[in-house]
Length: 196
Length: 390
Image: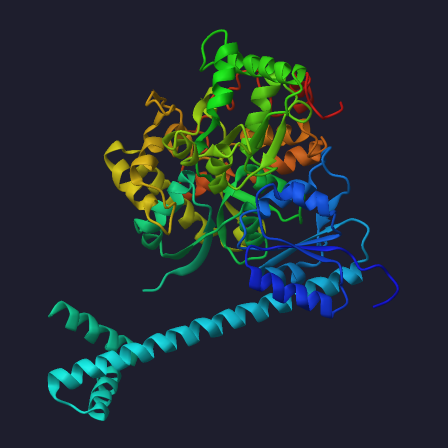
């Protein structure tokens, strides 16, 4: 970083993992003054107390509307705050909305510096979404695995099959019905429970 | 047959009824539209997603449609409102403590907003004298009917909304908790949140906004102007489906079904019984079970509520001017009025504009001079408290 003082960035996010990922990214890029607000109660008072140059908020957060109040002319505001992007920059808005993040700035910060902060936020939010997606898939694969094992057990017991035969039956049924093997396993479990 | 795919954003509130019923009863499908409803958590999200084209249309606060067209508070994107989703529908709810303080000061009919506004002024003065914290009022957005209705009401009694009390933005789902925790002393919000506060015993409904204004445009079906010009047939189909839904909702025989549709977790997600109270205009206003009935609580389609009225847009613009959010100019007034498009509504429903006589009183406010959409300056001159400098 240059000799310029690092702008103070406040992250408003109820998700601590995503906030940590973002904070780390900002610090790696040389933005050392980063604070995280996780509690939405009295949000404006918290923000005013920190007096940030940039505010980053996730779009799943209903408190985004609270931040819009900062644009209003009011005694409570010490420094005017504006939307991060200017009129002409719809690509930036689109990219940030797609990523699920929005940023607000306080007047007086250089545009180039802001652009780099927003780009970083967008890439970190996208990285988090990808992580979340992988986690969800791993979880569901694990659940499928468990269901398949149980369904195999049921088939082995009821139809006198060995493990390989039970798996082949599951797989061929799934192919015939154009369903996932996990779904077939789950219906066998449900049926077995009903017939108990 | 697959229809025209459309993504439409909404906030879970009862005044999205015409939109939700239009989709869930298959009225949009019957018009050849394949609508995906997208539930949102903030008005900022709805506005931004409409602006950049992620939504083709949206359930939007009428003042946000105007602010967006004027470029106030955000990027300037011209919006048109071709169907008015509802008139009125908000209420002012106060904490039990503030309710008791107001009752002690009330001199007259407690449903008369001038009587309560004067009582509020006395409560505010007494708190000031005793060095108490200013009262805090919650509302939903800087450019919202709720903000303007609260301001209009209290200013009529001599309370300056910027100097004598605090007005804070709160997301509607947080209102009830904030009232219970004492974070706010009162709020103005749409259904179902006032009823939820009463049911939880943490609030009293002081006013239906129809006490303050006889007709107040609340939410609109909003589309980008450029999109509307490119897709006139699709927009007309959307308007027709909404009108059909509004008519369906207004038939008392259909209320229970409409309330059940809205109650679904992926829609408004509140008990059908609570939703039906607001559709029927029969509300429990106090935790002790006191009921109040009004034929004007929320109008979805009846009394010509569906047709956008440019005088309503002018009134909302006048509030932006009064409270310092906008400057007054003939160009801005013309832009604001042009957001509300009765011509698109009439054309879609094949209504002869000459036959659609205007109602004599467009606003019907309890204070100030009668509203003249062509003389904002003159109208504002009838108020003492304002931020606009003539």
